[in-house]
Image (cartoon, rainbow, N blue to C red; front, side):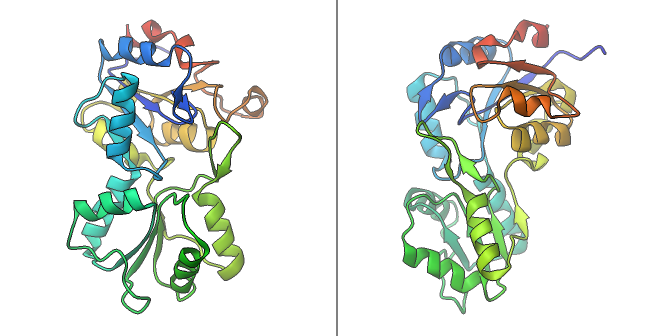
Length: 262
């Protein structure tokens, strides 16, 4: 099958370009070379940090950035809140993310009482205490609408995967029988909506390390996909698939971008 040349490349972050903030070998130089030829974007389900944090992290690493480079489920969550006209949102999030979100729309009440709460929004909160968890539970058990920024079960870490929102969801389902009404992150193809405004799906190459988020997003959006095995997915996981990724490599540095961009 003859493919169109790729005109934009979207990179996942955690487990693809770096792990625990440390770039994988050759990742930064590879992205720089790609960015000299086509626009590059960075997409992550990790909402434990704000887009500003990721801009700063990537800048320090020396990765090329434009104004629209960072793709975050936080943006989609905020847009959905505006579309619904909701003002009282119990936002379960790390303080830095909470403050960023509040700055985007100062009219939002992000810590309403149980009675005032119109919506519960759960980000990847990895600094909460038990009282905060109870405050979350007081609301979801009442049937207040419940959204999550994404549904990843674990987040990559140098010491091993750590619990992410999917694990929080399992806790809430076990305790109260509730599940979120909406999720905004991968594999939701809306995460690529901004890129798809400029390019056809087959002109976009997505590079990511997970099958159930990254590869699934690529399939739903209709874009091309490369799987590096430096993150969560192992070779034996791929062997079990009926439909396999177009290209599988060990690291991002091993991708033959000439074959995609020609």
